[in-house]
Length: 275
Image 1: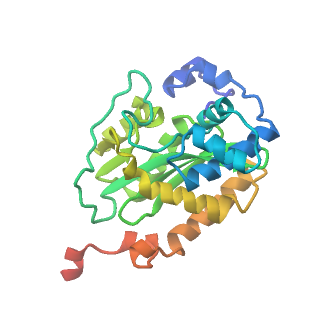
Image 2: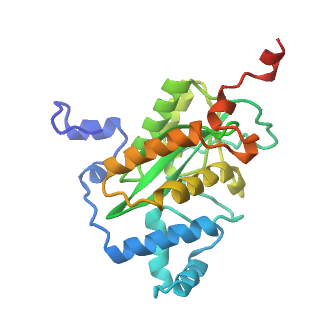
């Protein structure tokens, strides 16, 4: 998003994007092959038992033939952006100074499309590295409204995904997320505020509200990502685009009476059908 050829100085471009200059100039060291293999196994274990912490994941890795210390497992989990899911005092840690909004979904009956959208970020393994995938789903229909890949887990690609979803499908009544710094930043929430969207954030012990998007991640990884070994970001984007088209238009869901997300998303409300 930052262009070195622009007349606007890099300092000003970073300021407008709420991006520290150190983040722009930072160049990550490549992850070694052994760590990438471990990260793939950690990702699989986390999908199978999302309530496992680093201690149990270390034990599970040992049973799968990996000799690794708990400290290394913790370090790789932090790098992947994953943690055990269980009832605890705090969920994702917001950046200091970011505003936390109340949780609005308690007791709410989700009965129509564009009533509630939800978002999350997940780690994606690749042949020689990894990426992060963000997606926004409509909770009523399970439809993926927009998605994006990035090699860094920053706010800019999350905001771009949100703007794409709004431009294509209009606005939801409520937008729900966890308390991760990407979603609590003013850079992200100002889009929601400017469109009059109510902001909801998971509170203490509300991990269960992410269950629909966690199911999406499981489907994406076992039906698409783990079956392939993306060589480049371009290849990953093209392959994921085909998968999400299939997911929305061709993949029937038992919870939706074997209809596709597109079919449920575009159906008329009951009061319109009666009229």
